[in-house]
Image (cartoon, rainbow, N blue to C red; front, side, top):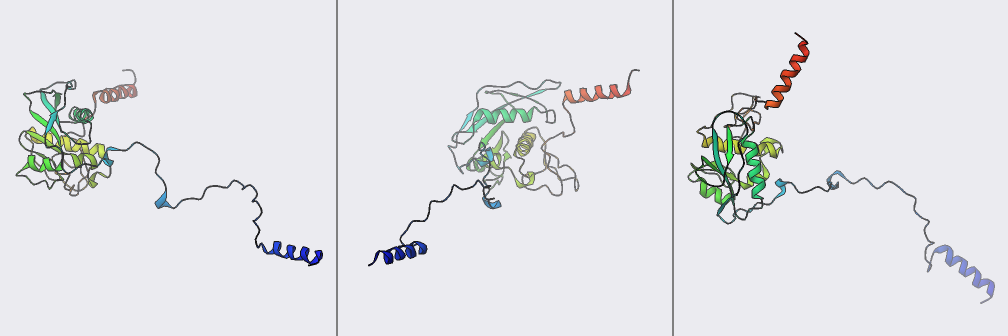
Length: 246
């Protein structure tokens, strides 16, 4: 084949892209990353929250008293002695659970002043329990493995509710935990269930808020209107400042 014909054939093949590699792409220009769809937007990397803990239906079935103690908050009035138990095998740190219980019980909006000990005699035992142990401890009451109870000696706290809360609290797990401790310990102090007093009002802490709020608003405290002593002192100081010198 004449040399001229070979050159023409080569040019035609190159133009058709047959049997040749595409030219090396030029360096891409920076462009903003594509916006992912809302359903696939990755969540920020944060430490797992307690509500993400997987609670087994059954653990060991045996309680262990959390060692150590903590004093009652300052103030007047009698002190209630109590201890904390955690069922062995649950995915919760016993010390953290005991500290959370103590903060709730000694809040100024709570029932009284509570001293945590690790031996008897005590007025109440606060016991974190698997659903199966809750069913056993609460009989003849029916918890369905989802509710907590007072069984005459123990405030039995269902670990499933401690981990997940309830929809009525709108995702505020800390507030629900305050409620369930206040409610079950309230039974140990002789308080009975109370109904919702009216639409839009705060539910009494002895309302069965784990089941329903009725038409009330959630409330985890026996005395929600109480204020810490420091806050009361600050308000008195502000009132004096507004009045000016006498």
